[in-house]
Image (cartoon, rainbow, N blue to C red; front, side, top):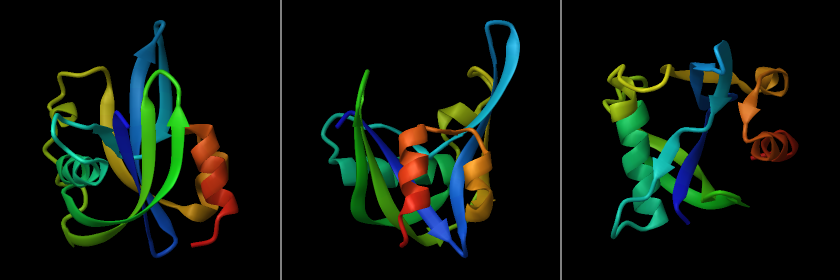
Length: 132
């Protein structure tokens, strides 16, 4: 696994990163599950805990592997529970304003998930079909 992402659900809301960026000269908006790359020597679980602290400002407990995708990179999506921290206080490099576009942590009602451009689509669909 090269990349890890968290599926955090609380009070019928899922934590996502709202992305806005320019793609081929046009503005694009979409959502992704928070997470990122695993660093050398980290387990996938350690990587997802670090990434969520960096991106969301949350301390989490990793419960289980929800999905794996194989493509340009091997990504693991983990069901996690919030154990502490303050949502939206992440200090990761993507929030420095130096990257391509904006990264905004948001809680999205599960009832709206089907109508939003959430990537990857396969994980969004599986999440909508799964009852936690």
